[in-house]
Amino acid sequence: MKKFGAKGMDTGASSDLEEATHQAYLAIANLGMDEELGFVHTDTLTHNVNPQFFREVVERQVRVWIDKATTRAGELVETNWQQIETLADILIRQEIVDGAELERIMNEKRRGRSKKVG
Figure: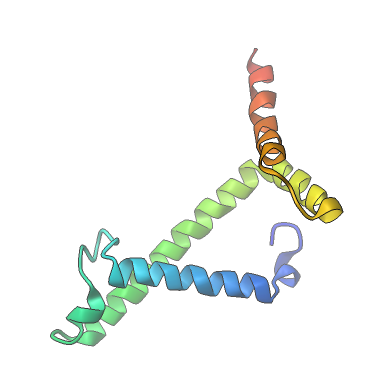
């Protein structure tokens, strides 16, 4: 999205968004991982309590989780943009990057930072 804007969205990105939303829902509603809702399995509770209440809380918290993740992803992209561009160029040319090469690419920024300090 940073490079191509809305025209950069494709079915792969749409599928990723769908999966992220689903995983946030599962973490909140089934695994009790949301601080506000607590350690509950809301799908079970809805059989004995007002299901509309839990649906609204879960939907609100899913939105909170997605908003936080979106903000964090944006920060990571901004912070690591040069490495992302380098990695993308390599992947376009050779379709694969081994672990050692990926580590080298990601460490370039850290080495550059330490050179500025020293």
